[in-house]
Image (cartoon, rainbow, N blue to C red; front, side, top):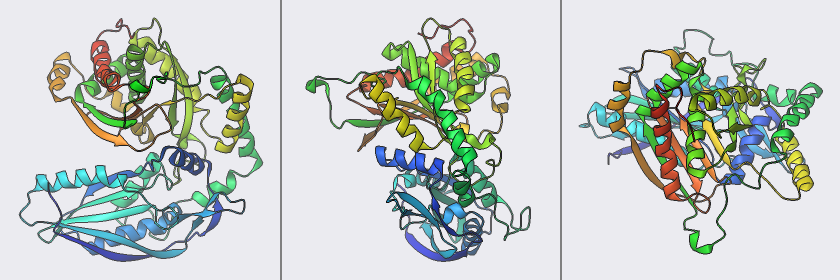
Amino acid sequence: MLEPIGRDLTVVEFAGAHAGTAPLTWGQKAIYQDMCESGNQFNMGGRMELLPGSTIEDAAARLRRLMLRHAALRMRLRTDGAGGPGQEIAGSGEIGLDILTLPGEVDEEQVARYASDLMDTWPLARSDFERDWPLRMAVIRSAGSCLYLVWVLSHLATDGGGHMLMLEDLMADETAGREVGDPRHPDVLDLAAAEQEPQLRQLSKRTLRYWESALKDIPAQTFTESTDPRDRPEPRYWQARFRSPATHLAVLAIAARTGTDLSRATVAVIATAIGRVTAASRLTIKVMVNNRFRPGLADVIAPIAQNSVLTIDLAGATVDEVVTRTRKGSLTAGMRAYYDPDDLRDLIARLDADRGYRAAVTCRINDQRAMVMRSDSEARTGEVSSEMISQALGETTLTWLGRRDNMHEQANILIENRPGVVSLHMLWDRWCLSDEQVEAILRGVEEVAVGAAFDPAAFGI
């Protein structure tokens, strides 16, 4: 395995136009609660190839401009007056830029693979939110040339949509577009203040009426937990990654036929595969919603995406019908995903008391691509043929990634933002779903998609 022969650090000084303290925004509060309950920090990785002749000084200047423009990147957690989490935005400070030097004899493919591996593994490193900045960046160089910029970004700073906005800034020439001294507005401090105003407080209350109807009659958990100690393997939590170019092509065909965007078509196919394996005829899942369609939120660098809840009826339906139901349900769910998580906790406590038992939606499908898709145009680019799908079937991979120390759901399926492939990172509770069931679900995603790619009458379960 390729390893750097040198690890250095250069200090980058920065200053910003906006500083102060504030409560966490609703999006920050939601993701922080998820972090505390799951033990996962949900960091996001990224990389970009540098132009020939790029220098360490160029990379430092890019990092400095990002810290100047975006208040969320200068954020650290603080305790508020009530003893809960708040945030402080620094007006100035210093941040380290890592410099990783590879052997001079490595070729371009090896360097690219190292950069890709670092982008996948670096986000697994844990951060101290009270000490560390939300952004960490490294330059990869070899034979005196700076070749790649790789970074890891905390989900407390922003979501996938904000990550893409940050990437646009990172790639932009400093002489084009906004001037260096002109940060984006509104920023995370403005958003935190707005969410305390009566208008948005009322929006949160109204949104939870939808949640109440969705959660009122749910079972205690999505999947049945084993009560027999002999069926409880250790370690309890496990993870795997499934990648299928054939599934991507097949879902493109399904999305084009049904007039559905790629994200919702993929979610429908995954839900169908879960129904086949678990015999669930009605599946309620958590889905992440990009709230950037709301007025004033499109360009904010902050976590704007929040969970919503979606119920999909699977019984007796064709795959196309499941796709249509998922699309319609997602439209409503998407309008009900901007709220104060504290309001939701109060609602859940009341519903648990009314039911006489505690209940939770313990299956999550999170499409990273939906956070960055600007339209459904990807679902209509080019023609997909059965021959293309057949040829791609040989490229399917399933990789067992090993244990997880903790998670607060029974199944969490992340649809990763990887071009030309459906890439699923699945985490699960082995006391509820066996490894064999999980493999059947993941391979079933491909089976469902390929079987329905050119057959509108193909049944789901």
